[in-house]
Length: 350
Image 1 (cartoon, helix red, strand yellow):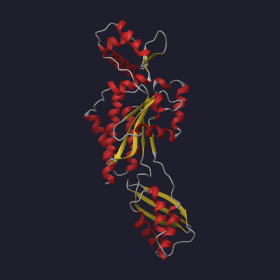
Image 2 (image 1 turned 90 degrees about the horizontal axis):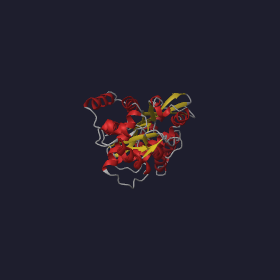
Image 3 (image 1 turned 90 degrees about the vertical axis):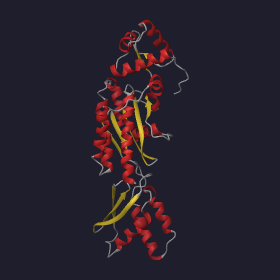
Image 4 (image 1 turned 60 degrees about the vertical axis):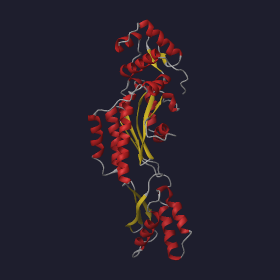
């Protein structure tokens, strides 16, 4: 969506007023409402004429002949890009986010899961957090343990403090220090390696070895073959019921389309990723309605931000709600929360 027109001051003031009124009221906004609520030194007739001009330019629309106007996607986009002032969080709000996340510093997955809950609770929208995927996850320790006569388990501890477990069959029970030798080999060659590169690294090592070391490499390759080839980051989703409390989704058809989205985690991940695509700065992104480029989602928006380890984006979080969402406040909350998660993970991994 491109914004080619330059709106004059009066047009900007009235567009901003309509957007803010509609966000608050969820009802078409009339000229008298704009004048009264914002104390404008303009007559309702003048405001009505400007609103008509904004409608012709595509920033507002009139749902019914006798009703007021509501913002279009283009109107929301102009508001977000040029008129919105990001709302500063209060000290109490910042302290709440700090406290809630700091109390869960023991476990990365718990922090990310609680972050989605916290976003939903504070914003009254749907909170979403995508955990780091294997393109940013390194091996800190790997171990094969004997579980039963013909069963073993591969335990992989990563740099985020998580342990991944995969069961594997054992052709014969291990003898003596067989597992000890295998585990030492695995850790000597795989510590610090990206989980997504484990199989290729073992194959590279195997080509350079002979005799007993080669046999160990072959055993190691058999072990890592049981690890998933690709494991996308876990998606944590909370507050979906809150979305259907919004007036926009009292319509059964609209509600069904969005509910279907929540059943398709891959599409949700795409929405989160789209918001931060090709962005080098850790700032929130807003995608509105038709900008999502997905059928059936014209009535929703997402506010997203990457969270980082050092300077590298490793995951993304955000909120999903109706297009009529309080963007200044949500942008501030998402931005601050992403910063907190980034600091926690940087401290953990570093």
